Length: 95
Image (cartoon, rainbow, N blue to C red; front, side, top):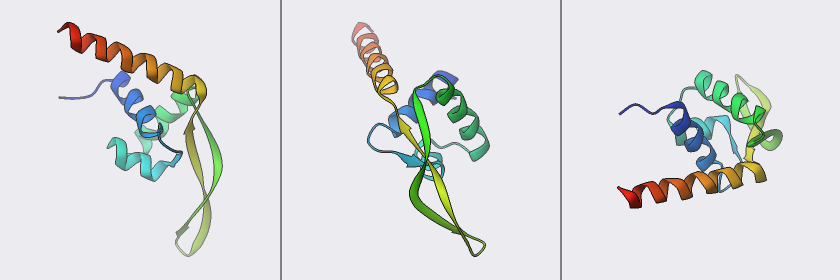
């Protein structure tokens, strides 16, 4: 079954719940390609649920080292994710 936008946003926020991640790791955890992931990250960040920053992790690509943008869940994002999970639990109990 195909995921809707809401499920994708929740999957991204769940992936960031434990610790901040770079886009590559988020791609694998959420099973999304980079272009779509970036689109979703930009939207979620615009709503204040996540924030991006230059992390300590570096990648080597074509012989060059580059610092990676890291994404983290904000307090607002944690609060909203908690509400969403509570609603999902309630919905499951009522079925």
